[in-house]
Image 1 (cartoon, rainbow, N blue to C red):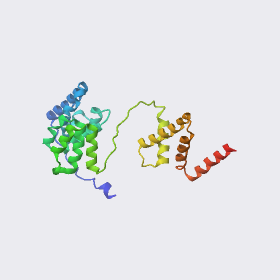
Image 2: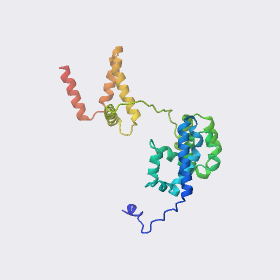
Image 3: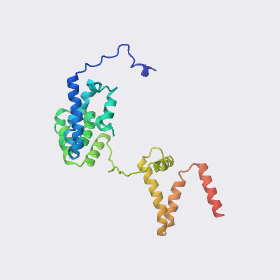
Image 4: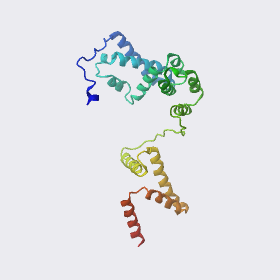
Length: 245
C-alpha cells in the first residue's frame, strides 16, 4: 500500500494566487481562438501554438476557478466537447518543443508538430530541430508520420489510413460481436483492422462460389476450422457427418 499512501500529506500545497485580470484575459483568448477556428476551418493550424501556450497557463494558474469549475479537466470538457485529446496534443507541443522550433510550426501544422514533439521529448537537448523541421515541410503528413515512427521504433511501417463510415446503433452489437469472435479465433494480439480483414476475406470466399470455384470456399472453411477449440472441432465434424449421411 506504499504507492497508494505516498500521496497523502498533512500539509497540502497552497493554491496559486488567482490573478483575476490575467485569468480573464487568457480565458477570453482561448474562446477567441476556438471561435476563430470554427469560422476559419481551412486555416485552423495557424494559431495552434498560441492556443497550446494558453492552455498550459490555464492549468498552471488554475484559471478555471474563475468560472467556478472543479478542475482543469472540466474546463477542457466545456471547450473541447468532442474530444479533449487535441487540447493535450497542443499542450504537449508547447511543453516539449524549443522556442526556435515553435516559431516555425505554423508553416507545417499542428499534427506534424505533435510528431516533432515526440522526437523532442525523447532527445531533449540533442533534438535535431533543423533536420526534422525540413522533413516536416517537404513530406506529406502521412509520410512524415511514418518517418517519425521509424525513427522512434527502428521499424518500417506499412502505409495506413483511417476509413470513416456511418453505422446505425442497431448494427453496432452485431459488428462488435463479429470482431470479438474473430479476435478469439485469430488471437487477442491482433488489431481490430486485421480481424475485420479476415471477416471480409471469409465473406469474399463464399461470394466467389458464383464464379464456379468451390475450392475458394473450402480453403476459407479449412482456415476457420483450425482456429476452433478441440471440442468445437468434434462438434463441427459430427454435423458434417450427419449431413453426409
